[in-house]
Image 1 (tube, protein in one colour):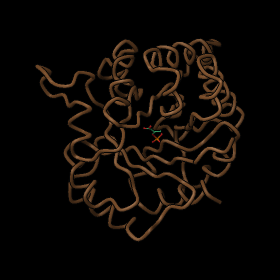
Image 2: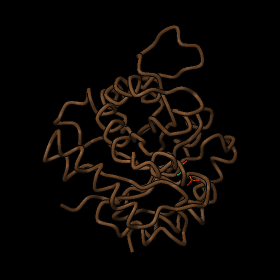
Image 3: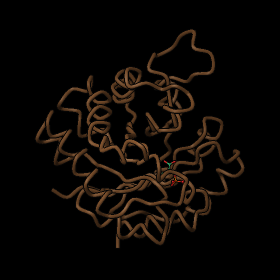
Length: 248
Ligand code: PEP
């Protein structure tokens, strides 16, 4: 089955409103044939980015699972949807490690995003120590099963899963094509344990120091349907070069 490639930039805690608008202007006039393109934007710039966006989808970087309530500092899926946000990154390793996001919370967040009409990008990945100890498979199995636990089988294919080895994020240390393929295949098979149809349809991205000079090799892998890009998504030229690599 052919799956539409998907390139998503993760700006993390970068870009003011003016900088977000300038990025979108640099992408204006580009229509993206044969590839879905998104940027994951800080809350404060979501509204402006969406208004300036053209063909680039606008995603948030986190959300709360409850529709509303006494959760100071949090934002709900319905609030994101109400300003036209298209999707949301969930379970990024920085949120898991630095802000205590748990698999249990993700069990609620992933279906809450879907129910609100947002595309969830669920991030999974092992640390360097887990890889060295032969624990990669166990970690991915746990994170995929927990994160997708409350998603009905018929909606599993709507979730995007980003395999992001933690040792490759922001380090310049990219996974080898063999490592990325092995993990991508495993993630797909884990979805297949729930639904054979979703196994074929679900998009699995690679994330971790993907750059214009290594993207083509990774994006050509059978179980790499795109990329979640941190550092290289901050400059439009670099980001668009990776988008082009997804369609060439
Ligand atoms: C990320 O933050 O998801 C990421 C992959 O970052 P980088 O591309 O900078 O490694």
